[in-house]
Image (cartoon, rainbow, N blue to C red):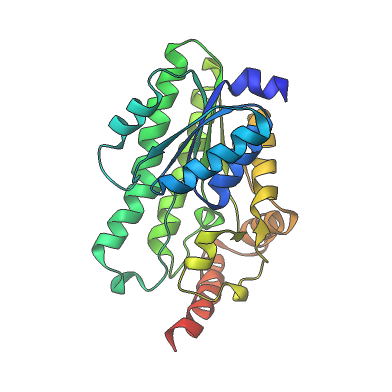
Length: 271
């Protein structure tokens, strides 16, 4: 715990911290003694979580109410963090909307790209530069999705956006290694979160069961400490990626398979 705090502390920024994977990152980082800047739209949830973690672990926290799908988010982020020694960014906030690409509203598609692409780029650039300018070691941990590994019909825009996050993180892992900045991408499959239950689909049709967010986050933090470019959490998820996605099927067959799976998840909702 002390080594982790010394490397990535004293403060960590966690986006999308009001629920799901982001909340779990906050909990596990607090247990390691890191102070937290919690970022999301629902400030009351951030404050409730922050107060709880202060009581449990004796840490400090700040909450920042920011809609990360908006433009100009860095002004609010800088205001919340300018006087803090930030050693870790967990860029987790994301957004998914399932359905046929041509039927989804253009504003929804743009929001998805803003939150899943531009925000991750802006935060990585901003905090990466802050860490390097201070000559300190630090970390960037980005959250992508198994949808990043191939096109996913009925999640076309989302899978494209998540591919950006994975490629960005892998590239930065190499670029920033000599600057003392560890970069890792968490690439989860179905995860038991609020976002998972809010999508308009029957996720029970997925071939992999939803895994606890706590397991995904634990594995992600271990991967960061090893400066592993990316981590797919869970044995079954890794099997799906390694065997079916990379060895047994061609890329085209893999996309076709996922199209069949995703269409099946949408059917109960469309009836």
